[in-house]
Every structure is written in C-alpha cells, then in structure tokens.
View (cartoon, rainbow, N blue to C red):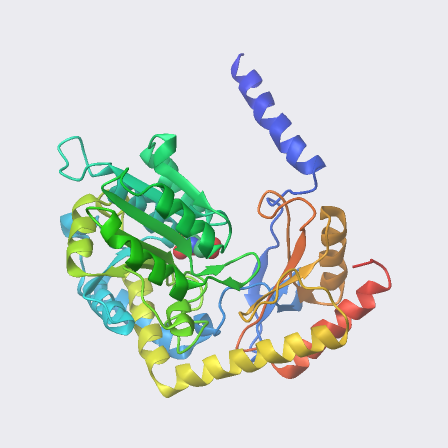
Length: 416
Ligand SMILES: Cc1ncc(COP(=O)(O)O)c(C=O)c1O
C-alpha cells in the first residue's frame, strides 16, 4: 500500500528529530498535585517541585477560581454549545470581556479559545481583510520583531502578503525598527508593528515605550496610520501591577493580546482595544467566528482571576513573585551560574549550550525531585540551549534554595 510510504516519510522525520535530541513528545505525565502550598506535581508516584510552569501566581490552585469555575459550569453547562454568533455567547463571556477591558483600560475585549488562535486570526484580519468583498485593503506593511512568538509568525504567514510587505526588525532593536519605517515611508497606506511584550525563551522585556514613541512619530508618514500590536502573554499577571509590560514601560499598545492560560490560572486568549477594533474583529476573526469560545467554567475562573488581581490578595502574590525573582537572581549570581539573559521576569534562562547536556541536566534535577524544561533548537538558536526556570509566587525561599543546591550538585557531573 502506498500509504505506508507516507508513514515512512513521517517516521523518518520523527527519527531525525530524535537523533537531534530535540524531541518533545515523551511528555512527563502529571497524575496529580500534593496539598503542599508549594507547587508540587506527582510524577511516577513521587512529588516534584515544579519550576517550569507559566502559572506565575499559582492561581490555577486558588479556591476563588475553582469556586467561580464550578459556579459558572453549574449555571451554563460544561461547554459553550456553539460558536459566539450562533448561541455560544453566554453572560460569563461578556462579563469576562468587560472585566478584561476595564482591567487594561480599554473600550472592549474579545475572548478566543487561546492566545495562539487570537494571534493567527487578529493579525490575518488586520492585514488581509475578511473576504474578497472586504473594504480593508492589504496595502499594509507588517513589521515584526525577529523573535516574535510562533503564533505571530503564523498569523503573518497566513495572509500570504508579498515579501516587500513583510519586514522583520532585529530583536529588540528599536533603531532597526525606525530604519524599516523610514525606508518604507511613502510605499504603503498603513503599517502594523507587532511584538511580544515579554520574550518567552529569555524573559526579556521589550522596549515598549521607545517603540510607542517611534510608532507615533512615523504615524503621519503612513496615510492610514500605524498600529502597535503587543502580545503580552507572559507579561500580564507577572509584571508590574499585573497589567504586564505596559506597567513596566508606562505606555500602551493599540491592540493588546493576552492569555488567561498563564499567570491568570485559567485558559483562553483575548484581545483588548478600542471599540472599532473589537467590533471589526468580531466581524472578521476566523477563529472567533468559526471556532468555539472558552467553556463557561473557564470564563468564570478568568473573571475570578481578574477580580483577584485587582485586589490586595493579587497584589500580594505579585510582590511575592517579585521577591522570588530577586532571590533567585541573587543566589544564581553568588553561585556563578551563567544566565542566557538578565531577566527581571519569572522566566530565568540558565545557559547550557547544547541539547545533550540540557537533557542530562533535566534528568539529574528530576532525580532530585525538581522539574524544569530544556529548551532547544529550533525554539532557540543552536548553541543557546537552555534550562528555562520559571518561578512562581507559590515558591518559598526554601524551594529556591533547594533548586540552587540541586543545580550546584549537578555541576559536579555536567559542566555548565
Ligand atoms: C508570546 C506568546 N503568545 C501566545 C502564546 C500562546 O498562548 P495560549 O496558550 O493562550 O495559546 C504563548 C504561549 O506559549 C506565548 O508565549
């Protein structure tokens, strides 16, 4: 049968990935969590300290979120039942959108099944229009940071714009962004600048204030103006007062993409912006129109997360997270560890440099009941293989000491 040849093509690609030691499919199976206040997962029957979760505030275990999730699913059922424009717009969805918009100081918000789905459809809609009848032309220049998240890259790819309409600026290089805007002045009706707020491999925080300033300065050089889109999936709920990179950089984007699935302890993605943008997205974003929204329970948990973040309890968790970042950085420096970047985010990247040693280090730490992730090519450049440590507000100083001690002991076996 010829389909066996199809299978063998796929198998040879799996073999290639395996031999490059960059395989991801043998995931660790978490069978539960302990009742410990620290984040401890049960893997192979033993509790391990989790240092690789995006749940930066520990909200996924918070009783207020669990209760809100339960209440919403009791009232509305376990699934949305239909896409939004059919019968899938439930009061919890709208309440969540209103809360998100108010939290970020915007007119409105729109919720997607994930931030990945949001990026794909939002970027496509803004640069390619909705259909062949669309009044939104594609006479647009898209400018993207070199290390933007895969969902942004795919959103741009989907639109299939000619090459000259797609520009990449060097990673976090604001001067290079200005060069692109200058060189393209007079060539396009409008421009869309897209960047991550926090870059998830290194925990770097984008220079948003400088980007905003440049976007505003060049706005009148493009007849239909320039919009700044920021995906702050890792910043929201982890930086500043919880509004993310915008708090740290004291500025605002035109279109802010977030996720409920990281620091906000629930699941799903969202966009918040001026009313006209949100109205346009409800008419054009394919993953909103043709795909289910999040389940009612998930939306309920999202509402509880925003309420918590706005209050004292949320702010205390943010403070604890910040203290943990400072403690980890201090101990890592005292022990002479080389970090892949100087991050002031809960993502702390320990530079190892090759896939073999990162894998060995993950295994050694696992033996010491510590769970971390190795990040390898193609997610990071070759030679930049790292252990991505992710801190949480739930970690105690003893947990962080335990991690540092385990890393020091591992250094006796593996050089890094
Ligand atoms: C910058 C960025 N954007 C989007 C996403 C996707 O988020 P979600 O899990 O909600 O799809 C991620 C997650 O890895 C991310 O790091």
